[in-house]
Length: 422
Ligand code: SF4
Image (cartoon, rainbow, N blue to C red; front, side, top):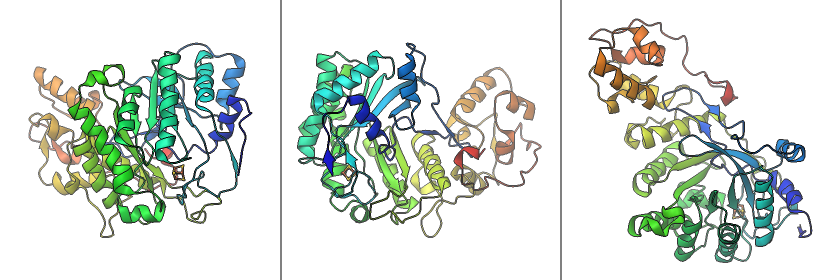
């Protein structure tokens, strides 16, 4: 291991970029409607803004340069610099490229250097926001202090008012969490695994309850107990977490049980499922990557819990605790619950409508609006509202009659490429 602190900041970012992919940002988010069988990656293009000069554009096109596109509330996309203060780390998580003792060229920014490099990229029109993490060097509290110092420089010295997503380090204390919430638009703590026992296999030095779950609880306590004007920009930040999926033997049932708690009790905005990919030079280097459909089914189930009013108990798992891959979880629920007692589209309320495959939140609102004027009579009406008649038809009635539909030959054939699933 060696450290090189004399490089140009942009070169350091480039070197770090190749190791930042295990972290799911707000960017690398599959847009998965819970009522759709497939998914599409979001964010191929930057939001309109200043024109980049030729050099900036070519830097941004590089695969290893850590600029990603994040979806903001309301759908706006921004270019986000995703980086770490250091790729040096004193801990030994079994899946992580930064783990101590792994032989690679580590990079460390000073707090000032990273803040200045970010502002240079911002002034060049290349980035609009920052996702900032770090390896742990000198303990969690000291590392958190450096993350806070960087955010403070950006907010106070450079008057940066844009988006900051700040990581909370394992070992940070509650005061540091409050400070992070006074600088950031979003804070996150990666739980990595759903239980203490599972975490021991994945990250032996991390403490699930004290170091990971506790800070997520503090974030919610602070949001609940302190006035919002104390937070950044007059409001408290949102919070997220991430699990590493498929590196050890955690089940989907365990992951989604914890997810349900995180949404209901701690009001997390997002739970990310980072599909395990082996990294050379780590204890898990020979472990296979997960089937991408597992990640898709987890996201779909997560959205059912978060946005569609489903309870954890309504999800179906195999005996061994995994979601079936061959069919999406909403379709499985509908087959069990609606096929024999279909829902009358002209009478069902919003919460019933969104449970029907092929009818999402937008379509349910359209149906409610349409019904104010006249009945929905046939499949053509459903088509006009943007509803997938093929998916919805087995589970609905139109004025007391089942719509005519053709049964699909197959639902959701598992594929190695999630982007090909439609
Ligand atoms: S503490 Fe974070 S950076 Fe360090 S080895 Fe674990 S996951 Fe990697």
